[in-house]
Image (tube, rainbow, N blue to C red; front, side, top):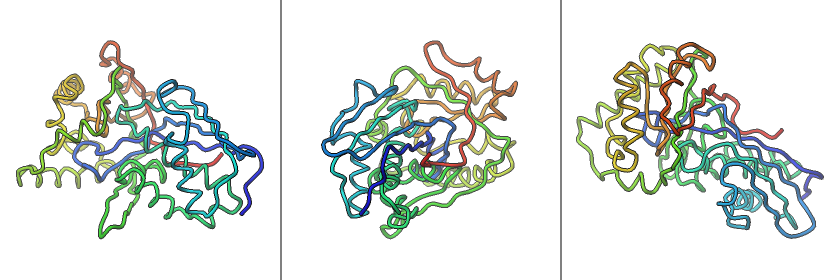
Length: 301
């Protein structure tokens, strides 16, 4: 096994899962990217983090990017003698924008890029499956790796993902609150059972959302109506759900991004008047960004 000389750089996009009704199945890659740089060294482990998570995440073997890299090296069949890793993070942590999936996918892609012929040993399907296993579910890792709009799940113990089309007119505006909510807290608020009528309504909205994103954006408001998870999570993120309610009442296709508490609203271009109107609705103390849909997914630069 041969490791490449010099550093390798990988970038990976932020993602939004669920998109309203598509609980644990729909995901969308967004134009906001973390950058990871790594190289094989003679011995030891050196980790540096800038941006989101700096001073908070561990700088040892328990760092999520390092754990993902180790898993990839194990799958390839060789561990390097030493590693130097630098993470330049712009994806907010614990905000429902897929920071953990970006770390996992980025680590896997980075490790594969450090091995000569790594793509032949660990192909894309294998990377996706490994990412989904590490994350525990595929709805964020699928768009982080493949880019664009993905429909993913697990059947008979096997993870799957299918890309669906996204109308080029569609973009997103994200409203990011100053404090986060842990995914396990948000999931802990969900009931074990929901009414059959709510499940049926959610299935219909999910199907409509695939059509709306694919070329019928005029249906996005109706298509992003959720019946399964957002209302149950209100106690953990009341300000986010209040913003969703306000925006939807005024005709904007707003939803909770992933497990929250970021609010995502679909728009018609990062520089449009509609997007500017949305940006004016940003609550005091929150961050607001207009983002394009990322169609590339994770890549080695």
